[in-house]
Image 1 (tube, rainbow, N blue to C red):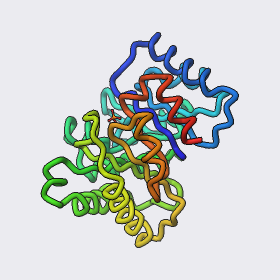
Image 2: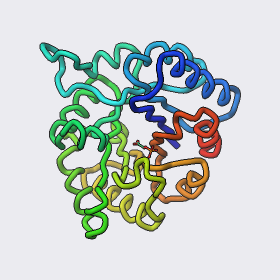
Image 3: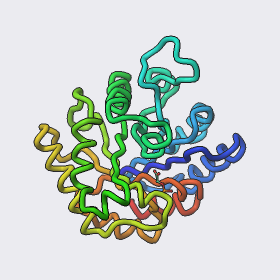
Image 4: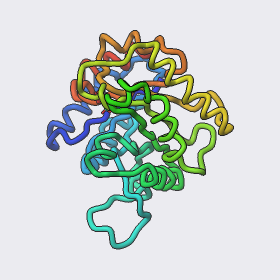
Length: 244
Ligand code: PGA
């Protein structure tokens, strides 16, 4: 399993160091097969990498620029992230699609940059509540797949995260049947694009230690993208231990 902790816009430096040290200490010496990756804000990546590096935990970034380099004040490029030891970058989170008006083509560009910098993009997809209620969820996600997955994908050089927008931070998760239905459609789309079944599909949205056990029973689940609970060292670590 792949267990990702998306810290979003949280923590000052001492909280960030405490949180990463606590997770690292709890998981230290445990025989965990899963890959655990922390996604703190950019400025904490380097110090956190030094804390977690001996404990088989990796770091990733929450975003990157759609540009490669040049006059883009405030941007952080994929190659900069790679140069400080990042292995993964989240692209297309719904909070950026909605809040920063990122389009599917922006997301494809970012994912492309991440792959070209030898890192793995976690490409987020998700429908809103209206689309779900109107029975359009599968269609919306298929469209996001068509438009936000770059052309240079190959087996295992990217990860998909299915995060229904209405599930993020709400305490509600879809039924296992509807997650399975969505995952089956995504898996079929991948197969149609010659991507084999080892490419991971994550679920994200209101994951906690109680629903994690059920989620792990979903066929096709490659792991979890965890927001709020990733700020709680003990609960996040427990999910990593449940994942095994
Ligand atoms: P949540 O966030 O776990 O707080 O719902 C998940 C995410 O936005 O990645």
